[in-house]
Image 1 (cartoon, one colour):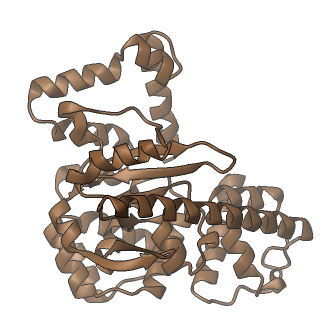
Image 2 (image 1 turned 60 degrees about the vertical axis):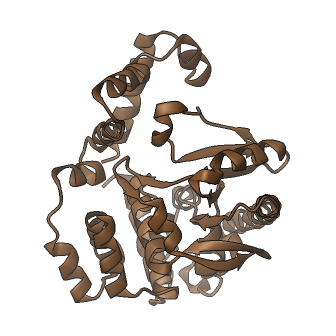
Length: 366
């Protein structure tokens, strides 16, 4: 096993023990190197490890490494306060225009799962609004001096962009990922009507908002974890959610079945069992094991070429062959302006080469 893989595995095992209140043992971190700490920080674990290991000085972590974790925790506290101020400003502005806001992912996790927002770093605020309010919310963010930080898809392609990233620059930049729908892996789409039926009223940082029900929240977080780069912190999110929030397993099975997301939950719990020692009740596990997935599901979830299959799934969302071919052509052969300004490459050959390089990078991560 490579050094990076070894240190990452050691960090994951330590985090698994700490998250389940298992004994960690004396001198557990005595032989940690700078590579261990750099890996932990890059995985978004610095603040949580610092706070959690304060009760486990027996692990023997070097004083210099304690200091690095401490600085990570301090930075996270500052960014957390900035995010909270941004959150209150944006949600208050939405409220004045009667736009209901549903809070997703990090902002929810920091307060209700980690019980301290500084322990769960996040790069943006994920906010969901109803589709009919989306353009109104975009204009409001523009008035609050947020700029769009991604290519905007319009017209017939709008269905491919369930969220749009906004950023406001400053000493402490504020980022808002504005969602109009929940779509993962370009395959799993959670119907907005059901999402809002599952919304429950709550309060965050002094503002009235909505959250997903516990069961739908776990489904969304689980699929999100499978979608993105395999961060230890994202798996820790799920482990702590199960320990601190809890689930109605019968309701989870029913909801997952109606949404057609039993297969991603199967792989979520497969990984949780293998790497974290976390298992669901047997009846729920049997429900997951009994489900027969479609051919596309395992391809978009865990196939070596899953990023190609996800692009295929993305094309299938578009109605009609001509629209799909036009979109494919635009992705492979972008306009000069898009290729040079957005992607930083000149000429379609270099653009195709850049796409191949990105694909090979993801492939090697398997």
